Each structure stands twice: as C-alpha cells, then as structure tokens.
Image (cartoon, rainbow, N blue to C red):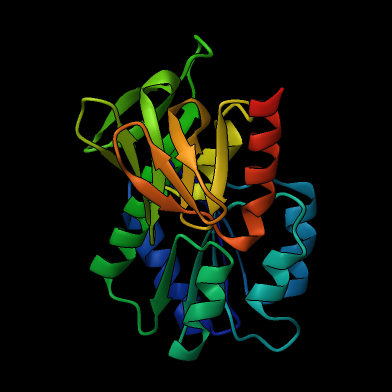
Length: 233
C-alpha cells in the first residue's frame, strides 16, 4: 500500500530533507512540495492526498491553522524545530510529530504509523463487524463480542468476551464512527461501551457483565439518563 503525500515547509533545506526521505520510502508517493502555505492551500482545495507533512511555524499561516481550515483532512505528520508545539499537534490528532533535524529512521517510523492507521480500521461487508489492523494483519472484530473499547494514547484497546484484547493504532473517535450507535455509546473520553454488556449503572459508574467497572464523565452523563428511561419503558 502506498500513501500519496505532499510536504509544506518554508525552510528550503528542511523541504529537501523530506523530499529525499519520501523518494527513498517505497510506501510513499510524493505528489508536490510547497515552500508556502498559500500555494499549498490552493492545491489542497482542488486535490486530495493521503498524507501531509507540514511545518508548524510558518510566516503566512501556521501548519495548525492550515489543518484546522481543511474540510477534508488527510493524515498529518507535523514537522518543527520546536518542542513547544507538541501538545497542539496531538490535539489535532496528528499521526506523529517530527523534530528537526529529522532523522531518516524517525521519518520512516512516522510513515509506518501512517500506513498502519490508513489500513487500521474499516467496515466489514457483513455489517456485523469491523476490521482493524493489528500485529501486522487484519483482524475481524464482531460487534457482539465487544465488551468495551479503551483509548490508550495513540492506540485503542478492544476488550472482547473470552478472547484476549486487540490493540490497534487508531483514535477512539475514528472507531466510534464505524460502530452502530444503538449498540455502542461513549461514556468517557477514554471509553466506549457495548450497551448490551452493561450489567448495572449508577450516575458516575458502569458495571459490565464481566465485572469491569468504568467511569462515566460529566460530558456523557446524559447517556445514563437515557439508558434508565429505556429500562423503564
């Protein structure tokens, strides 16, 4: 699998380094490079790409501002000389964050993460399951076998009945998009639960059929109210 990509950086030397690494990496197809955000923005309005290498600190507009303005966001790998931008980068759900001067091995590692995420999750044809990329292979996850799904920084951990958990490089938000809303609910920034696996609940806590207890954050407390109403009816 090859990812199409473009690179944006106002520093000519940094852009040359990314070009060199991209051409050497057989998992990438470099489409264009840009030394200013305005031209890159025009290109992205008319073309699609799988992956974007973008500097954060640029004169006309920051890389973060560029990404925030895109209606359809590709996978993002931020490049910068400043560690101070790391938190902002990950808030944008970036695949990775490369500090300059970028080393070849570190570049390839970031690309591999992007490849895994691109392969990482998709709907299965039977509509009763979804597919994740884990341990270098596609794994089928049947909806009815899921207890809960846990966010673990760059990964999600899918907890299953009578099977070991499956770890995949993915965001909780992306997983939630593929799950049927009537069967799964997010109850915390770190947890999605299978509704039919709930044994009991209180205002701030859920107990699953296997005894696992999960917190319910204030942001998702409306789920508790709706679930109780459903039980009454």
